[in-house]
Image (tube, rainbow, N blue to C red):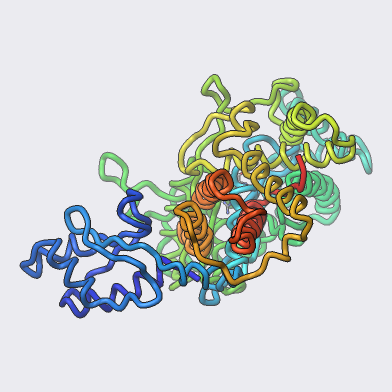
Length: 563
Ligand code: ARG
């Protein structure tokens, strides 16, 4: 149940009766605890138009609202806020059924991860991959149909070098373990050997015009490269599958048609043999329009053209309602141009195309992050280092755990810490990667949440009952800590909806952190096992564990029973 929406709904009727039917109630969590649980600020904006004081209007809204079953208290506070305390019976209802309510059916295409193939995945591929994965899981939990599109870069000039090098080396020259070395060799040859560089350029033309032998060589290389990506996805625990890959090459056959569509709309201008689109939205400083080039003078298509073909496919063939691009902030101009091109071409009217950018992961020196091992940027090295460090933490904390459990817990903690550290930051800014911060058992970290979860498991172990044995109904909420915990639990649905709307995973992280903190406060203040309220308090504990596990699961992070 979405508490916030429920309250907004009731208040809307109150606003209407007070003569302010068109004003939004503007409901949000209370900014100060003494204001109750939620506050609505809508009277502040609407009062002036009605010639009333904000507090006066707020009171009229309260008088006209039916709070039965929803609020225990409601009052005007501050300059004209409507503050309310949620009724315990509503919290009991919310906790009786922990199922997530689906949103209206929608098909969402998600473009994320989308690395350029040819070499191993690097640290800078992390953010798109895990942010996209978390969002995809949240949308699915809310009942959306999510179509993942891993728009890998598999068609660029680097494949000319690789295939030319492969030609020189003979058949099955590349194996997974050789990927990085092979790429380095091929790149070095381009710099050293002009004849090789010329052959490499010819291969690109052969590739794009469909030469069978070249395509076969290319395919072999791509398969190895994709197998590597899949291994990284599995190590990361993200939900991308080989069948989600639809790379740039998939659109090769559509490019001419897309450019023809632009031409038919009269949008193409030829300039020195290149085909350009001039859009009014993109004026330079001097007022002249900056062109988007869709085909170069040598006939080659560009990143824009491929993306336009992909956009058309997503809107028209896949039938998307929303298309989310989880891509580095440095590509913001590209996406503004892409969406403007699509609009001009008449593709995807009514579809919401959204670029959701993110900043860079930085090292302590303020420069893009490098791993300690070898000072490189291989993503697999990063995950290995995370596991090693988490293993030390687990051993120090719990030396009696057997080796297999220690390894499993270390993996969950280490990979979880890396992902959570990223997901918990507002994605639009850069952030500094810090092992010490992310592996701390205190503060807004994955280990802190995993620890809270494990603690609840040991509470049930001590009680000698399975977690599922604590069943509704919720008893009376005797203390402020119980009310606060129940309220936080009941806010899960609205948090997920907020994440879906904003495409911001950090809202879910903050929610889980507040939940764990509310649980810890409850657990310190309220005896559970030898209390008259034992069942109700066990139910609060059970729901806390379930919500932590579900929430972390949506972020792609595992929980462990002991750590
Ligand atoms: N392969 C691109 C890169 O590594 C990212 C692709 C993002 N998706 C897209 N449809 N342009 O920069």
